[in-house]
Amino acid sequence: MCGKIRNYNDAASDIIERVMCLNEKNPKIIKILVMQINETIDRMDSVNRIEHFNEYNTKESVYLDITTALMRNSSGECIGVICSFNDITNRKKIEESVERIDRLTSLGELTAALAHEIRNPLSGIKMSAQILNKRLTSHLKASEQNLFEAIIKETDRLDLLITDLLNFSKPRIPKFQIIDVFEILNRALLFSDKKIREKNTIVSINNDIDESQVYFDKGQLLQIFLNIISNSLDAIDTEGGLKISVEKLVYKNDACICVSFEDNGCGIDKENINRIFDPFFTTKESGTGLGLSVVHKLATSNNGNIEIESIESVGTIVKVYLPKYRGEINEY
Ligand SMILES: Nc1ncnc2c1ncn2[C@@H]1O[C@H](COP(=O)(O)OP(=O)(O)OP(=O)(O)O)[C@@H](O)[C@H]1O
Ligand SMILES: [Mg+2]
Image (tube, rainbow, N blue to C red; front, top):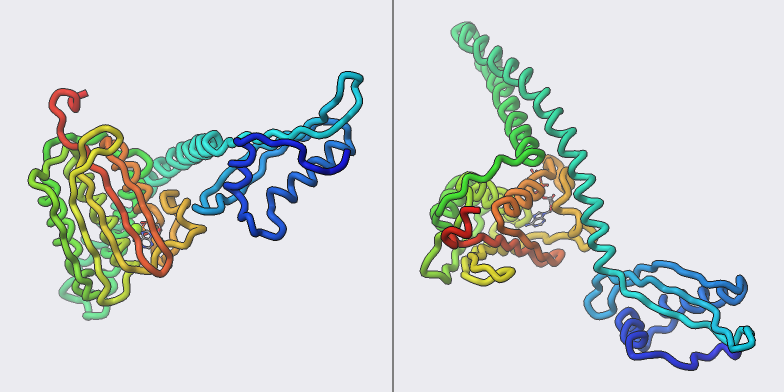
C-alpha cells in the first residue's frame, strides 16, 4: 500500500468539503481518517466511529459515521483500505430530542409532586401572616409592619414560582378560542409597562396584517408574550429597543400569524443557545430558568411554535408562530 487516495466519489468529496476549509493546515477530518486507516491496517479489521464536526460555512453540527474496511484482491491479499462516510446528523438530532423528552418527563413528574407539596404549607404561612398582621396592626411599628409585608410579598413570589412549575410540568389543556393578537399583545405591554419605563426602553410595533385573529388559549398567549418581553427587557441596557412585528405567513403549510420580538440586548452565548428551552437553565442571578420552557410548552400545545435566533452582544429575535382559525379542522 502506498498511502495514496486512489479514488473517491462525489458524495465523499462533498462531505469532506463541508467540514473542512480547503486551506486548513491540519484538518480534523484528515487527522481522523489517517488515524482510522492506520488502525484498520494494524488490526487488519474494519473500524467504525462516530465523529462530530462543525460545518465549515454555517458552523452547524455535523455527525459522521465513518467506517474503514480492508480491501482485498481475488486471492485475499490486502490491497488497500476503503472508507465510507454516512451523514447521521438528522438521526443524532432525533436521538437528542428523544433524550430531552425523557429528561423532561421525569423532571416534570418530580416537579409537579414537589410543587404540590410546597403550595399547601405556603398558603398556610401566607394566611397566618395576613391574620396576624390584621390583629396586631394597631400595635405595630412601621418597621414591623414592613416585615409582615415582606413575608406576604415573598410568599406571593414563591406562589408565582410554583404556578410556573406546575404550568411547566402539567400545562393546562388549552381552551381554544378566536382571539385578537393585538388585544393580548397590548395587554402584555401594559403589564410590562413599569419595567419598560424603568429601563427607558423604546418599544415599537410594526403591523403588517389586516386581519389579526388567531386560534389560541387567551391566558396562555398572554403568558407567552409576558415571558418573552420580560426576557428582552432583562437583556437590554437602559435606552435599548424592542421591536415587535406582526406578520402573516405560512408555517409548515398552515396559515399563521408570526409575532417577532427583536431586542438589541446582550444576546445569547453560542454555547447556551441549545439550552435556553431547558427547564432551570438560567444565566440570571434571580432567574428560575422556567420562562422559556413554559413558553415552548404552551406554544406547541396550542399548535404554534417558537424559534429564537441570537447573536451575542448584538441582540435576539424571538418568533412566535400562532395558528389562524381554520374552521372545523381546528375543532379536532
Ligand atoms: N431576549 C433574550 N436576550 C438574551 N438572553 C436571553 C433572552 N431570552 C432568554 N435569554 C437567555 O435564556 C435564559 C433562559 O430564559 P428563561 O426565560 O427560560 O429563564 P430566566 O429568564 O433566566 O428566568 P425566569 O424563569 O425568571 O424567566 C436566560 O437566563 C437568558 O440567559
Ligand atoms: Mg425569563
